[in-house]
Image 1: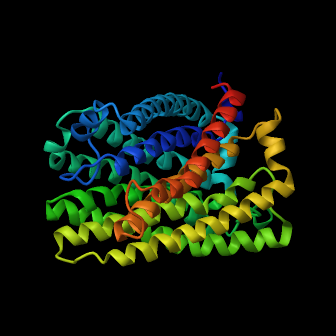
Image 2: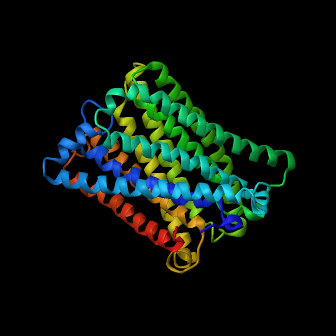
Image 3: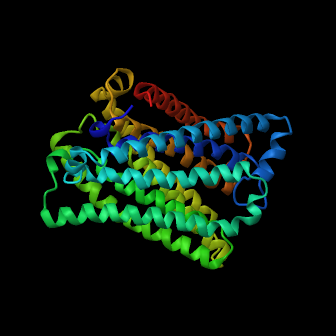
Length: 386
């Protein structure tokens, strides 16, 4: 299927959603499989736990299956979207795009490719034996990857923002949604990518480059978030939320997850390389704060979309909108940060004992959201027939 002028850069959200779902299943391995000598679960801890034939083996089994399945879909959709985009660039529709508010949708490209790096990192950690033994040699390549993606993200963003500031042609009548925050989403994804070597490398140079990169992109993301939220809500309060772009009201949820994980990783990096002891209680306060904001925006977004009939029109009916895939990322992000909250916020502070009944009960709401997100993903995947 060739779309040409009917293609939209927001179609990349399909690949992004699949990649996010693949990474989400790694959270079960990350937090349930003991890994005392490494900061994340790796093949060398996962496989022995898998062979024990207990309840954890079952969890590991289905996690591995879904990691592989959604990683496959991610790469399949990434290739499809990249081919479609290359054809789309030759059309008049693309020329119109780069002179409109929608030019910012090009940020879905670096956003999705940054997710690709994360998916590759998870696949390597889970399926390659002994990888952690050479991880210090791989961190510089990860940094290079995020530097490249970051360069293109900044290029797209500055071309867009400089055009608006020189021409003053931003159309506020078409800004009654939060789709403009896709740029903040992309910058936050790059920030959390830089934060990984910033947190885990024992080489202080690599560690410092990672932390600086994370703080650079996170700072820009936070600055823009203040601006975009203000003008977005102003337009929405004046005109009402645009129906097709309604899922954008949930975009703050993945942004909060990415920025939250970024600052958690930076804290761990400072702890083991800068002699700055981590205050455990701060993790409880911080994760509670982030999760609270996510719940607030989650409830608000759901109530608005329910009243507008969004789910009936763009999920249950035959009407198509590439922006519908924006529903996947908030579900993934809420589940992922929920796991951080239960483990780093509660269990890490001994508020809830790990592997206790209460520990698993607290996971249920987040797992429910993950399941609902998977159901929505396949409904949309079937509808679009990629």
